[in-house]
Image 1: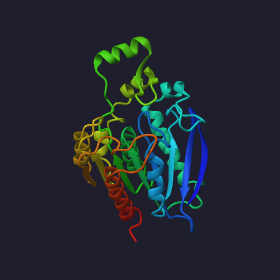
Image 2: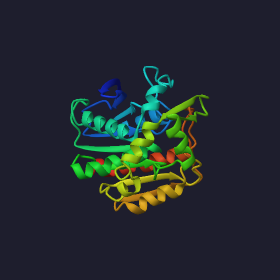
Image 3: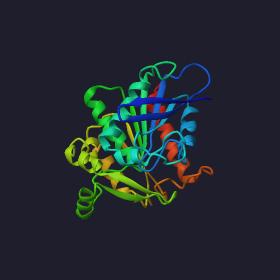
Image 4: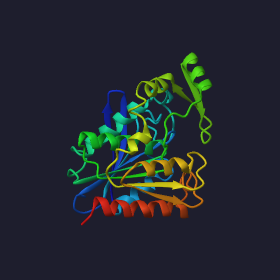
Length: 279
């Protein structure tokens, strides 16, 4: 397998990514992986997942959103101001830019078919992107979401008032112990673009084959959110992984796969084989 790191500029930051390409003829298909909130491309299962998919002869691209908080050190939240400045609209811009690069000159050859895989809030981002791609004619051919957030409106009114008054709130990263800032721009972006950022409504506009994978014991995003997304989408299929939590038993540092993670990946590989390589 050929592995190459790259950096793409964005008006609001840099997209740091990793490209994995199987040996041999250039792949005809590509998959873009999107991490979630407080995640990044080298967290936990992401490198493993990328390698598993590349083993099926897909070109696989994983990347850090510009607001991930990760800069040149791939495992350290060293840019908390970038994290604070992040918005949902910026995330959509980042995913669209990565798709543009994949369909441009990032790969040895432009892929015939492209898939998206997103985890948690990255899953919501993938749903929004797939819905907008359907309207614009952008070539996305298959989607998989793992433990996807079904609703981006996750704050009560007291939190909103505090947020507006102080300009930012903080969320604890239980792994690193960091208090991670969220600028009020995130709230303002959501409130100004509520209809465009409605994940459930977007799900109803996704027309490509979509696999919704969710742990039945997810402690972070209720499995009901996965069920609701699958009900909305005409081409969605729901796979509930029995007993699995939000990360399917994986942690960071990654110490190996789990039964739940293997089940999620087996279903994912089958979905992409079927819909990205129908021959």
